[in-house]
Length: 430
Image 1 (cartoon, one colour):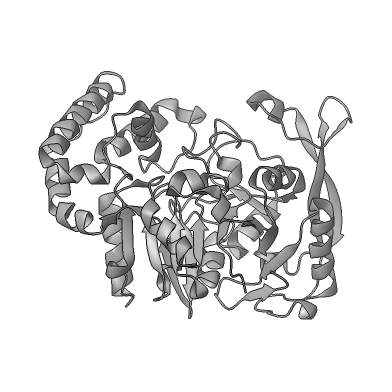
Image 2: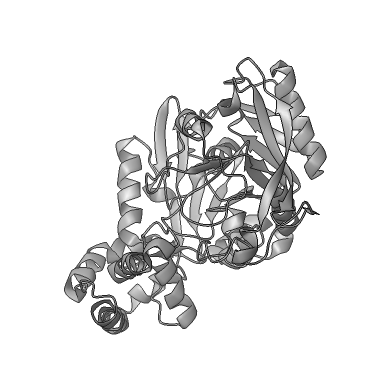
């Protein structure tokens, strides 16, 4: 079992099954740190046959030994946090005393959500495909230095005045440019006032807590949200998220130096999916799309939208491995491929204007339209992998599929997930 601190990050466009893997390792962890994104993330956990979806709380919180830290890199919806806590308590999880939120975390308000919805509506067919949760506008406020942070609640006079300025700022745009309904300052201030005391109570200096935890040699898991290909700098821009979703952002988003982590695990789905718009070279459009979508339950945990389906793309994965410094990979949802006669792996791209092979990903939007995938075909396995927990018990061609991915990528697949339950996990080597 892993003893050192680890960062667990999605290597594709999100929805790789990070939540299950974080939950699996969290049984031995002291702290689980969520360090970027907001409640636009969706981490699905299946424990004892019960499905729980988390959006803002770290996935390891279902273990009573863990302390959940929501760090400064997260943009936080206070209402959603409280709703998620209440949901877990209804499932008999005592979490209220095991949550600490950074005082430096920026807050998400109704005007952020309204702006998100208004923009997507105005863009029409050219929309990004956001979750409409207000995450992008909240990060804009942070960068523009007009955002409100949780710690600002200590000074209610300042908070109230600044909130009024922001509401007026957004309402002017919503009304004059987007022809959209304005938000109510009174409604927003009343809602946050009711939550103020509890939010202050659970707030703290996450950076200082993490510094002490390392001195005490505590085991910490840093949990990424979304996926590496949605990173604001290195993803398929502009169809990306609003934060840095690669492994290096754990340090920036949590306030602890990068030297404290040596182990970076990338979570990879055995095929590819993405939600929303944007380039997708290996996308499948025939009846296999519907089959895999249904079998893999490929509907967004946050929005409920059907995910786009495609074959595994090793060109993109090589880039993801490079920018994340992954030391190992976890392969998930291999059981969804059970029963297929053949399975494709994208090993390169060719130019649609010719047959020039290209092993590098396009850098700009127009270039994505000029390539098509080059596939290598692997024979499928006519048996099930679901629930298998011993690697040697996997079907021959399932093992061959895994070995071939390792060979192409040059990195070990140390963990294989064979189903949604916590126990459906093969550990090869850590």
